[in-house]
Length: 415
Ligand code: ADP
Ligand code: MG
Image 1: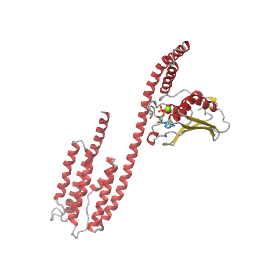
Image 2: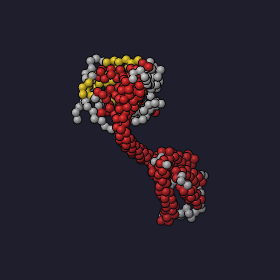
Image 3: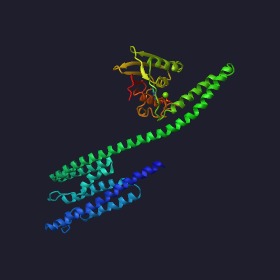
Image 4: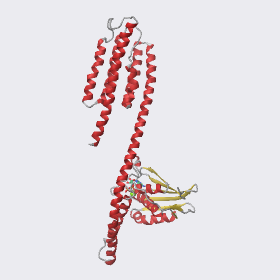
């Protein structure tokens, strides 16, 4: 329904442009010809062509041009104003061609054709904000002049041709400006909408998350108690606890959406953070036949960070790497200091890679290609890295693997 409403608005815009065009065209066309062929000769005491034997299409020219009007109105009324501009440009060029050929072919009179509306066509074509239409108009107009020049063997077409080329250039620049302006407006609007959506979803997620967390922790506590009390009765307890923990992670991730976090910066050892992460993900890696190699380049200084959150970052990234290799493979984690002030951790896998069309969606909440994914991991990761004034870069080749590069400042500058 919403889409229908939007298309109606667009059609309405096109309708406005078409009606404006119809008014301008008809006013200019007839007044120009009346002035040029009737009033001007009178003033100059020449014979008006209206008084001489008719040449060209004669009065049929005006009848044909006028006939386009009811057709255009019909299409506007039918809700298809988009064709009006094409009817006019194609109709005008055809009628004018025939008229010019009938007038000048076989005649000795030197070529002089055109109407001020040709300038209108060219200069006003940006109001339709349509590149195809621009090309039809400019190539049509210029082509018409050149064709007439060739057929009539008359160099008089040179002047209008040059003028039309210049006008086309101007129209093109205007059109491009319109386009880029509209595009920017759309992106700004889109970003705003996205932010608003996130704010609403974020508040909701935080509220729900908050409500779920407390019952969840008592559920976990009692399950654990039960397991300790009856160690031999139920083999499902560990699975229950594991699943509760999984819900807990998802809830925690949810609470991250669109919500800035308070972070506590403390000095921590990156080696320890990575080692902890590996111990958490080890089981999953082994199950899938994934080996992990860690390369620490030289002695690494402690890094100012929120250790708990940084662990979350690497858990998410390594999990993604493992999940990208269901048939097993190798992960290489490389940690190094760059320019003495940046800690750079790269995680390279040999997995499925990321399709080009998906790259832009990475980090958007709920974007996932996995059947049981949440699409929250990268969003949280990105947010935490941003909070640390760091940078996340992803470089991926389909079926070759993915390299995720996290770069963090070693010292946080207090703002
Ligand atoms: P989830 O893991 O729940 O799907 P994420 O936010 O962690 O959510 O990841 C989003 C998507 O990004 C994944 O579904 C996957 O398509 C893609 N992706 C992330 N990391 C990798 C990787 N290392 N290799 C291939 N695809 C990846
Ligand atoms: Mg993930």
